[in-house]
Structure formats: C-alpha cells, structure tokens
Length: 302
Figure 1: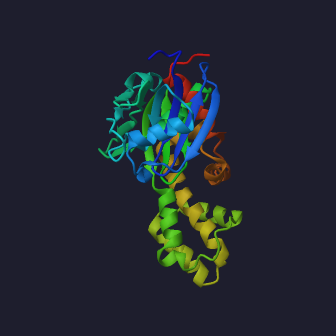
Figure 2 (figure 1 turned 120 degrees about the horizontal axis):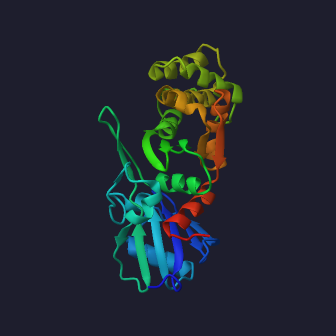
Figure 3 (figure 1 turned 135 degrees about the vertical axis):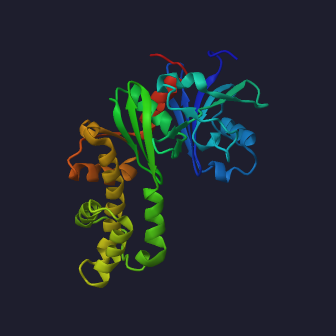
C-alpha cells in the first residue's frame, strides 16, 4: 500500500462510542463520523465492525490508526503499554500492527502508557496519551494536563515526555453516589448551583472525604442546605478532593497553566474549580487535539 493511494483514517475507539476522522494528504479533516460502536457494543467482531465503518465512509483503501480501549485486553487486540520513558514524540514508532483480511487496508493501534509511582502503585492510560500528544503538537506548554471524564487523568509532561500521571475515579463516584445509596435520597435536583459547588470545593480542603461526604447529607436533613444544592455540593467535594491531592503533589510545579482537554460539558466544572483556587488554565477542544495527534502519528508534516 502506498501513502498516495490510501486514505488516512484515525479512530478514537472507546468503551461506549467510536469517533472516526478522515484526513486528506495534508492532514486536514475531510469527514468526521461518530457512532455507538464502542468495544462493549461490538457484536459482529472488530474486523467486521471496521468493514462496516469503511463502507459507511466510502473508503476503499485505508491507512488506519486506532487509539483508546480498542487496544485493551477487552478490545480487538491488546497492545502492551509503553513505559513513560518512551517520548510522546516517538509514539508513531510504537504503533502495534493488527492483521486483517480487509483488502488495501493497514491497521495499527496506539499502545497507551503505564506508570509505577514511587510507592509501587501502577496507573495506566489508553487514548489520553494521543490527546496530550495532539495538544503538544498544537503548541501546548509542558506541565500538568487534565483530561476530565468518568476517570479523570492528570498527566505531567516535561520536554516531550510523560514524567508521571494519576487517575481519579471522580466521575464514576459522582454517578454512583448521586444515583444510589444514602446521598441519592437527599438530592432533589441535578441543576448546577455555583455557590453550592464552591462550598463543596472549600469543604474538600479539610480532607477526610468519607466524612465530608456524609456531612452533605447531614446538612440537608438539618436544613443547613437545600436539597436542590446537594448535587452541586457533592460535585465540588469530589472535584476538590481530586484537585487538592494534585496541588499537594505538584507543589510549585502547579504554577504554570493547567492544560485542560475535554468537551465544554466535561471541562466546565474543573475550569470553574481551578479558577476558584486561583490556578491558571487553558482549555483545549478534543477533536482539535486529536487531529493534531493524527498528523504526528501519520507523519504528516504541513
């Protein structure tokens, strides 16, 4: 297959959803597609699912780079994690090939990263490394990157290398606590209340999350806080617990702007929390940084 005859196709293939980006020979976006064919929803097999996508995009010959959970143990083919010693700038050299019977199609997977902290505890990422690479390609400075989500990632980058990263189950915990169990019984509304969010953020500074979380319920049942404020208070408490942990860990390294990569809906509360804490931040749109990363992964230089 030659680069001139094959269409560049990048796929962000996650757990629930799949996003595809068709590029021209200069790396510009020609077409974008999104569906719910995440790895948990693939019924006919991954190769057949890719064939269906290529047909939908009217692509006959493709050079495909996939990232995200498609390369996990539960995905198409498990891609071994890279050590953080491997520079992001050389991520294109570590793409793992996937054999298929699709004519004229080359398929590769971005491997993701593994990090072992000083206490011997492991952390992993799949997909976020592509977004960090893309932001760097688009002139983001080094320092801390924040990728909000069900499991939010904090990634520290120095001179093009990931030096460490931490994952927080903040979004998952919020979903569980606000929909099930004791706190869910006192949550009257999911509407955002900024003053309640700020109060939860301040309470997080005290530490002891399991105690302060119960206090959220206690404030409602003692009429110290309206039930309509409980969801925002819990959100501030959870995000604040995450942020204060990072601030404690980062120390002076937090002085530079935090590079926040996420949709407005995912990023807004984190950006609000960072502002309330006086921490500068810069927001990046996920599609834009993904395209920047694809240019680097396909070695398309404009």
